[in-house]
Image (cartoon, rainbow, N blue to C red; front, side, top):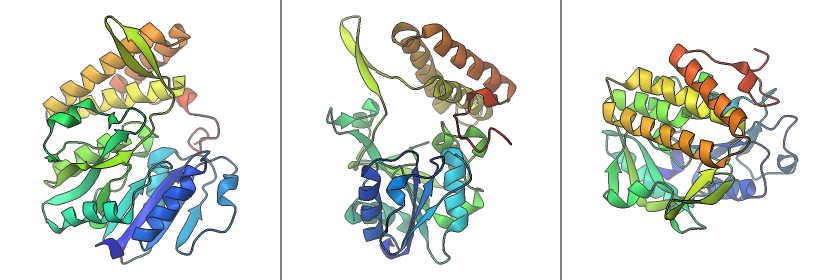
Length: 293
C-alpha cells in the first residue's frame, strides 16, 4: 500500500525540520502536499522542491483543520490512503509501510504511531507503557496517522470551527462511530514536539508545563468542553479522561503560568463558549483566514 499513499503536511512558520519531513514522505508516498499556513508564505518553501511535492498557499492561516481539508481537496486521484504530518514529524518509508499494512484489515480505518519525547526518551502520553504493543484507541493525534482515503472523504474531513486544538480527537471519535477501528502501534515511535515545555517542582516531584499562548488555551478548553458535551453518552470513559486532563491543565496554569489572570480568563472564556457552542474570534491568531469571515 505504500505506493498508493498521499502525504499532507501542514506548516506554520516552519524551520529546517520541514525539509526533512518532505524528503522522508516523498520516499514513501506518490505525492506530498504541503499546506503553508504562514501568512505571506514561508521563505523555506520558496526554493526548488523534489518532484511530486506541491506547496499550497491559502490566503491566510486556515488553522490545522482547514489546512488538512485543503490538502484533501487537492489530492490527486488514485491513492488509497493518506499520511497526515506536522512540520516536525519525520517518518521513514519503512515506518509508513508498517502503519499502512494495518489497513489490509478491513475493520481498521486508521493506524498511528506513538508520540515520543526524544529529549526525555519517553512516551509523551505516559499511559502508553501500560497498553499492549498494538492497541485499539478512541483517539490519536493526526500527525503520523495513516487513514483510508475513502473514510476520510466519507467523514467530510476535519472540523474547521475547531481551528487547531482537538481537531484530531473530534475526527477520531467520528471515525470510531462508523464502526471502524483505530490502532496505535507503540513500537513505532513518532518524535513529536509539544512546543515550549518547562519543568516545575510540584509537591515532592516535578511536573512539565506547556506554556501555550493565551489564544491556544482558549481553544484547548473551548473545543474540549464542546467534545465532552457531544460525546458524553457515546464515549463516557473518553469524556471522563478528557475532563481530568483539562482540569489538570487549568490547575497547572494557575500554579505556574504568568500572567495568571489573563491566561485563566482565556480558559474561562473557552469554557463559557464550549458550553454555549459559540466561538470568539478574539482568540484567533494574527493572520487567521477565519478572523474576517
